[in-house]
Image 1 (cartoon, helix red, strand yellow):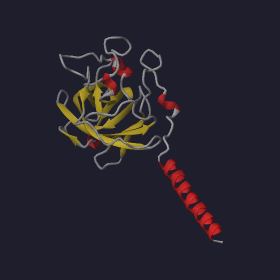
Image 2 (cartoon, rainbow, N blue to C red):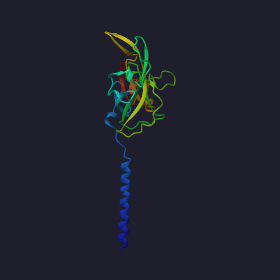
Image 3 (spheres, rainbow, N blue to C red):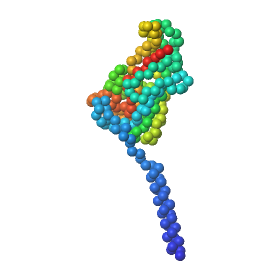
Length: 237
């Protein structure tokens, strides 16, 4: 009788331990990269490492925080009122006068792959107004430079540790200088000095694992985790 009791007890303990191990493994299951992670370099060749993110959309915000203009891909155009910007330095409409409109911008990222390398300081958010877009150079502008022909936005972002499939927003601001211009026919509108804007996100370690002396990795679009390029932001009254 005691033998049967102890055998039954051992079975229950074994089952209990087995269930704990199964649930523990399920909690720590490594999720596969999504198909969107199989990205390409600027020449269309498979990238050396998968891309961690896709940009789902870029949203320009009005001064009240509402959505003002939404970009869902590269090479898109939106017209935004300077008076809906977070700040606007000139309220008049005198031809030749200059001003600056500052917009808050929300970048919505979706993680589609695990990092190929853990970040050091963090993820880098940057932009360029260069009309070459993704083809701007990643080669150093000066000895020790690691960022190429871009402008860095703020400090590195260290909180992009969301799981694969999850989306997260990053918010930053950007200035758009303009000049009040007579376009003829009685149309007097602000003219933005920037023909286009491209936005990029890097893993600060992965981006330096590419050989920046060899094409296509001499180009920024080949080494970043996600980007929208050549967005055209026109200003209106």
